[in-house]
Length: 197
Image 1 (cartoon, rainbow, N blue to C red):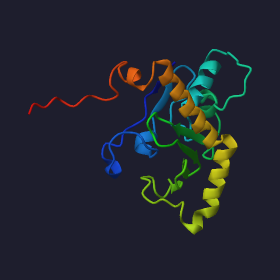
Image 2: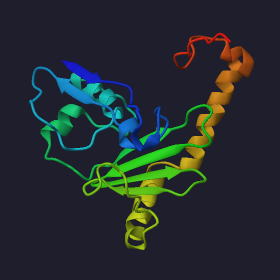
Image 3: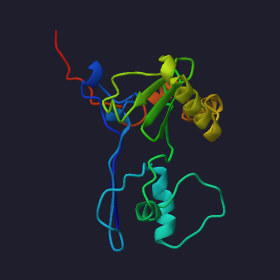
């Protein structure tokens, strides 16, 4: 059995943005393919998440964990009737970012919650390129409130973000502080070529 996936995407100039530090699909979405004995060929239209891979591994080996977890086996999701309203959560808390960001996908809606900033709401059925933010539109206020409530039912965004940044600070301190940490490992991006004056 093979599971094929990758890191998230990159804007590559979409919206005038370069890099991948945002929550739009071109930067946040990942491919996910599973193939092997007993896996029916085709497309599963139920939204899935990378967290579902851990459940798939447990299912594959017939293993169990006695804990409550958020994911579901890809085998079971693919075999079940399509559930377009399944909620999928994604988070971003990179070191150096101003605040955390959260995506909640459910049905044709994509809700992006930023701590300390206004949210964004997109109707992916009618606007798959995410060009029209409906969060400030009074006609979509109820949907925005429902998505915010659904996100808060999954996690407390402020508490999760606070914990993420505290964990990052502890890791940096464990490496001897910021300056010592910057000297470890490879740079985060390809360095620009040196220019001689």
